[in-house]
Structure formats: C-alpha cells, structure tokens
Length: 250
Ligand SMILES: NC(=O)c1ccc[n+]([C@@H]2O[C@H](COP(=O)([O-])OP(=O)(O)OC[C@H]3O[C@@H](n4cnc5c(N)ncnc54)[C@H](O)[C@@H]3O)[C@@H](O)[C@H]2O)c1
Image 1 (cartoon, rainbow, N blue to C red):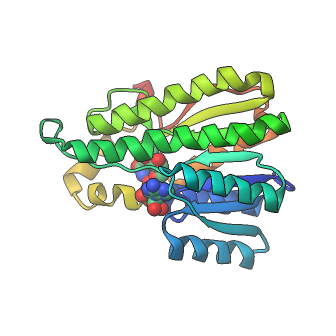
Image 2 (image 1 turned 90 degrees about the horizontal axis):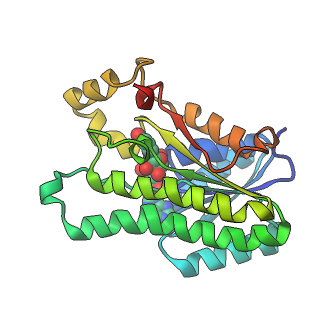
Image 3 (image 1 turned 120 degrees about the vertical axis):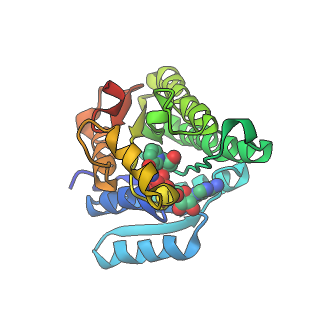
C-alpha cells in the first residue's frame, strides 16, 4: 500500500471529488482526516472507511476560519504525530452573469476558494517545516489555467489565484522538502455541478468542449492526486496538472 504510515488531511471531503480522494488514500493505508462542514456526510464516509479496514477521522473544519485550522493541526499533531499530505479541495462555485455578480457572493468565493487554500497551506507548512517533508495538493480547475468561456469570472479569479499561490509555496518551501502542486479538472459530475447537469443545453456545451469526449470522473481526479502525493512524484513540484481530456490543450 502506497500510503501506509502516512497522515493525510483532505478538506471538502464529505462528498464529490474530496470524498473519492479520501476513500482512495484510506484504501492505500493512510490515516485519513476527512474535513468538512457537513458533519453527517463526513462521519458517514469515515464509517465506510473503517468498515473497509481503513483508518479515518472526521474533523469539522471551516476552511475560512483560521482558529479552526489551528485547532485541526494541533489535533492531528497530538493524535498522529505528523501531517504528510494536505489536500486543499474545498471549493465553491456560484455561476451568475458577470455584470450582475453580487459583491457578497464574490466575497464568499474569495473566502472559500482563496483564503481557505491560503490558510491551509500556511498552517500545513508550519508542521511540515518541522518534519522537513510534506506534500500539498490544491484543487484548482481548468478555470485556473484559461479564461474558460463557461465559468464565472469570480471562479476564474479564485482558481487562478490557487494556481499561483501553489507555485509560490512550491518555490519558497522547496528548501524544506515541501512539495506543492495544483490539479485542474474539467467538469466532473458532483453536487457542485448539479445545476449544470440538470440543464441539457449546458451539459451538451460542456461535453462538446472536451476532446476526449466525456466528463471527468472523481476517479480520474483522485488517481492524479494519489500519484502527485506518492514517492513516484518526489521530483515534481510547482506544476499545474490538468485532468481535462485535452480541454486546455485545444
Ligand atoms: N465538479 C467539477 O466540475 C469541478 C471541476 C473543476 C474543479 N472542481 C473543484 O474541485 C473541488 C471539489 O469540488 P466538488 O465538485 O467535489 O464539489 P462539491 O460541492 O461536491 O464538494 C465540495 C465540498 O466542500 C465543502 N465545503 C464548502 N465550503 C467549505 C468550507 N468553508 N469549509 C469546509 N468545507 C467546505 C462542501 O461542504 C462540500 O462537501 C472544488 O475546489 C471545485 O472548485 C470541481
């Protein structure tokens, strides 16, 4: 098992992409911290992990709250002694026309998608520096690489920030053997994309833009996350990896 004796923390892990990533890390032997606001779903996932013979713990964590991050890191250090991998996966997407975009919705997007990742990395590197090792994965999007025509400008802004924060941390924390990479999926069928999938025209548009001709799956994304966190990726840092069936290449 690739992650025996490793400690992994995943935000936004109660459902969707985060839940798949958490399940895969646990299945590969990691002590897996399932962090989310959604307690019922998060705890249910931990029960599933345990039923499968894995090690899982639920932590209620609001990624926008620095006190929550301090407490979570303190608990992980006390309980597991270290943190090997942090996956900053929690994210929100509110699609509205640019010219009508409300400032409070923009603030919410900035808080979860930018501040949440910033705080996660800040508190992870404090622990990882002591260990002289660590790996950070940030969930961006194709909208963090291109001016994607179907994404909101707010989403593009926040996911672009994730891309560049990742590169900054990769460069500045490489001397401590801390790696940081970002992952950039195209459309994945999760609750976040539910509104889009309920509209046949929007669904068709999104499918048509993918050269490989299908939507990404949570499994596609989780496979890349596990590779980037593994020893096989020991020399990979500061990169932005699309999981997009060729979308950003076209
Ligand atoms: N679904 C897609 O098409 C797609 C494509 C590209 C990138 N992404 C990105 O992947 C990540 C996961 O997306 P998903 O589709 O699984 O979304 P999702 O909505 O299914 O799950 C997101 C999870 O994040 C949690 N969350 C939201 N705000 C939080 C907060 N403040 N603190 C802690 N947890 C919080 C939610 O409770 C939820 O469980 C996001 O960053 C998203 O932007 C998704």
